[in-house]
Image 1 (cartoon, rainbow, N blue to C red):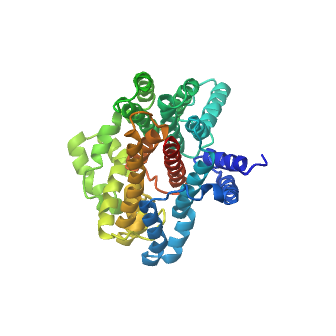
Image 2 (cartoon, helix red, strand yellow):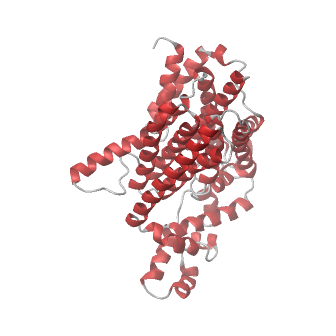
Image 3 (cartoon, rainbow, N blue to C red):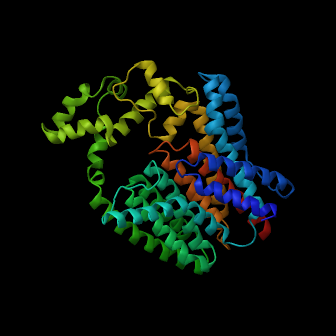
Length: 437
């Protein structure tokens, strides 16, 4: 442990393992400070290796300039230091760690996935203990997490990294990679995280489909097909269990459609009175219509409603607000000081980013994610050797772009998760490509 590289691995592993774990901010901060010190210690190893990319530089420049055009410069700087800037820092340290630890071995992607799985493994252990103590299955139990979505983010990273391991890393890791994938998916099902399960499963399927259609060498092609079929079977079995145990799956379509009724901002400000008659006309008098009305106030329908209201506000405020997490709430309160339906954000990462730092900020961050997607596609064009990092870059960038449509993921620890793993994977791919030449 006296070697600087060992310290970098220790701090990076700790940082990544607790990124999506609740109430670990102090440990996270200690880990990233220690990681920065160890990386500075080894700066000579990174010099000439790191490549930031123009989209990231433009994104960083905009974040530094934004406070001066924001609604509140003090709040904007605080938001930069507490979330946006930390996302940039995660990109820097992720790329730095990759520059130090990556080599010709193809098992690093497996270890990165194993570290990412720590939150879901803790959840499964606590779930098992709770089940043993109560002699029942505590479906919907989140363990030590304060929100099931955090388990879903960790599961998504785990499934994508382990799927890439199965297809493109050494055979000795495949058994454990399958076990980690099943554990990650099971965690989201037991926690009743609908989006967590759906996006983690889709992320893994995307990796196998990319490998399948990429004209691989025969050994990779067969592995990709077996992995695809196995994951599909596991998803079908777990989806059947999830739908049976969680009634929200069965009523989701009806509830989402109700969110498109009426004037969104009016309902947010005044309540559901203006839309109740329309709901009753469509669903009839009785418990069914009342259930839909309640859902508009605080269920799946309310999520559609708040996104619609957020888009309207974003159109009126193209430069956003003050960069904070409460951008939607603050801009809505300019319309009505006491909204009847109060939500701090829109549960949509892209709309929340528009409301926080404006249209240009959202476009620039999309460009950052698309840069990583483009690097992944470039890696997939090599028909001789399939790089696991190319698969990770392609699948993980699409995972976060689409995940942003259903939750506010471009903030806090989620922004750091994206920055660290994507920058790590991009640097790892570039270094392995250079070694091959």
